[in-house]
Length: 154
Image 1 (cartoon, rainbow, N blue to C red):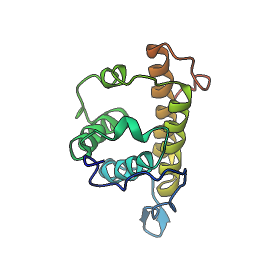
Image 2: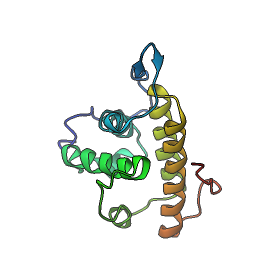
Image 3: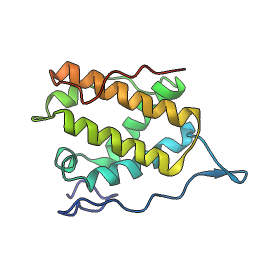
Image 4: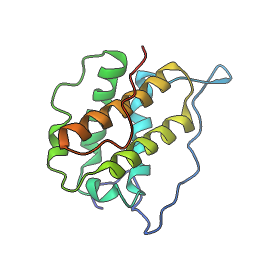
């Protein structure tokens, strides 16, 4: 996994590391802010790299390049920053074998990563958007979704 310098190589057995420290502001756990996205995604992709089901899809991804782009994506959909332009779906068309269990694990990993660090309405919106993104991508890939559609409340 030479292209993942920020994360450890996945173990053969499934495991989870202890959650990262929660973001604390003024003595209480904070909600996700735009400036938190990069570190949140570093933690998320570190967890993905330990997931036997997901890691193979990312072992050739240059995370130094990928994470800032994905941070821009999340910034755009969460905070309307407009920093992301592109087609987030296109790379997934070139990933053979993606099916509902992959998307279920991706969403569960995202939720666990967010919950380990943040609490609040933006955090809940991020998790709801992750479900919506997974649902949409599954439909576009011709995969039966692992869960029903969950509308995003704003």
